[in-house]
Length: 622
Image (cartoon, rainbow, N blue to C red; front, side, top):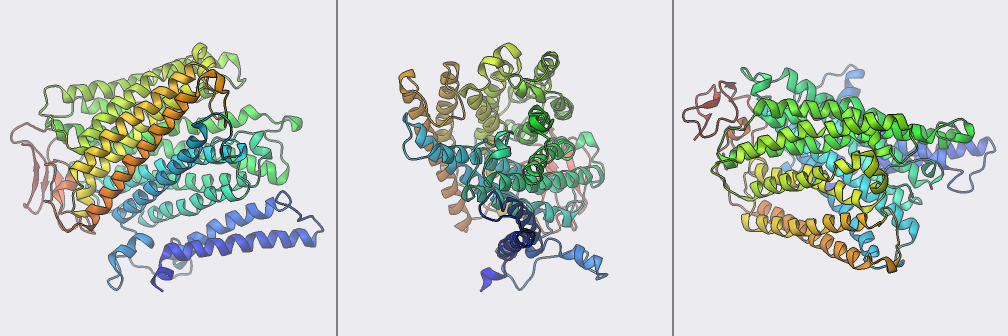
């Protein structure tokens, strides 16, 4: 059967077999040593070992390590792996492929699937919250669904970042592929066993810690907690490897004439994001690994009875997890800066300032993590420095807003669907930013930290910083990826249904947060008047889900359509739009270009950004 020949299928089967064999091996060793194997707690070490073995087995089964294994055996491998002419093209997306464009699509489809899964979890527990009292979920299942919603959504965002960076960066800088194509494929595929392990926690007792995995709760949670840790560890490994690849690609593979300050602005955003991903992701892996080891081997890293310190976990965790917010939003802000000049037909105002502000956000982001810990019992003398650092990060973010306003000012603005989502991103992210300083100021954070105010603020930041730009990117580059343009009517319906529904969710969340509604709880007192607000939030959440369904219908209809579009749909100056759509396998192998001007000189007569060496095309302003 063809489905059994797919790399994805082989990988999943290998992971199941590997997990079973790894678990069985440790169970057998324990039995030989006379150790008990009576319940899940007894076999937890075996399950943890099986989880790691299963992850490795998936990577072997899917084929992402084949070339490296051949090299170790002294077997030569091809310089380039092209598509197999004997297989249908769609099969490339279910097998290991080294073309960055295929990998970008793989990341993107995975991201959308994870978004749908995380959104489904949210709808389930939001339905529970629509009325006071426990309706159909147990507290433990509620906690697990809430935690899975958070961590799966984060995995969805990370893979979405991977989708945009992998597909766009080589095309935008004139490279034929990423610097390390095999490592690029490995970085994508390691997400799959990671995601499967995280979801498997739902069937292994779940966990009651939320997505943060704080001890001491995580140190005594059910077995599902360990699967959560292993899965996040693998997804984090993907982020590290992908970041390394982006950095090397940007530094070493730019087209002739493309200095750093002639790069498309999205490349700057991807570069700054990768600096964070490469240097900070180890901390979340380390913090989760230490809890995992504490549970399996009885270590005392975070156990006060053994000399440990639970606050240490939060320092390690948030040292990554707040910079991770900028891993999520910097690419989104790069999309906003990339699209505004195209649809305003004006030069990007303050290009160099926007580029450097991305690096400034990445740098300052490393000095703000402890504002998440003002209520955690950390040393009081640390509060004020972290408060000032938190407020300081608003400065480079403000630079971007100033530039966006300057770009729009007196522009010839048109509003197709990508522009609508771009403008929506600006407004939503602005509101998320304005609601941030109260969380970074000690006096107000002590009152707001564990309330629904934080939930509303965080969703504003994530939707404005990533979700809206991600949809803008899909609508904008879909013609480049497929040669087909998504339906404008359905796209605008998607936007105008999602936007007011989203505002209803977050505004009401922050309102009830100010009135004392606690976050991360499965039930609440009906006499406090929260029930109508929770019902409204739930209805609005389902309307957001309906808008996403419209997006999916648009996506499927467009893919099934035979209607083709011209190569440069949006009349963009960017290099990728000077290629046919879809882009050829080798990008610029037959059509190299030289950068001869500035990237965003829209509206300046006679200006040219790239000159194709074949003489067949150039990126000129109108």
